[in-house]
Length: 323
Image 1 (cartoon, rainbow, N blue to C red):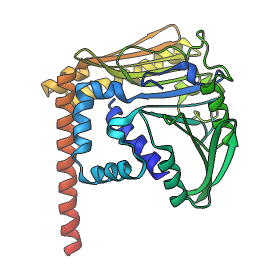
Image 2: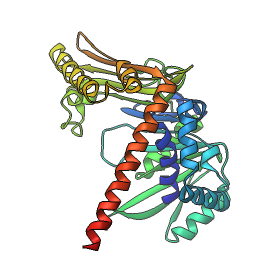
Image 3: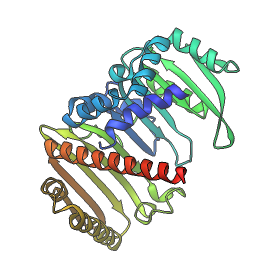
């Protein structure tokens, strides 16, 4: 499971500013309630993604992990990881399916490493597939993990073996994926790196801490780059015009605070000025775009400030320990 987490983190790290790598709705169960897709190939093509990838690979500890993964399972996430799709047919904590697509992975070496790390794992056969179950302790409780490898290119994980089986049925064509008329199914804007969508949000008891989501029917978040522009969009369909207008006022307030705090910096100011918030009927929309060059400058400035803060904290900590 540690290797799965490293793979996901390598995808999430560069993309958080941010199947074939683009989202493929045919690979998601028809009754899905939400999807999250990371297109790592699209991320690598962006200027910001290249910069972040270079930063990741410059860290000695991560390079050692990558070298170890190449040796042990024959896969290099920095090159072979194409994308990841997560989805579920319900809103439930710590459930759902994660499908991680790679160029190729050595299934024999992958299973050998699983047997070494989790000698108590069990193997189940389903059709032509082998599913592996093992138990991990997480946050003080035992957690079952089920995983399988589809055609040496898609790693599928879930806590529920039945969800892994259902995912295999979709990939093998025994069950249908999202239909063209599903709001989850659109492939999205070209250049999208991160795509998040959810339907029937008001039916979930997991969103009660977020007023706008708990009273909404639809949400979409997309982030990526096209040409020389970075972009991000968010659309939320609420159940009332008043709620959408209230949410717009809150978002406008955050933007105003950001301008007050960082607007004096020319580059920060241009990036902040790219945010546009609107409300129409019962829908809230947030659109942002900025030159990738400006975005990279802001990321570098933020990184430098974080490093300076960390260095200052370490000095204060060392001085305190000497007392």
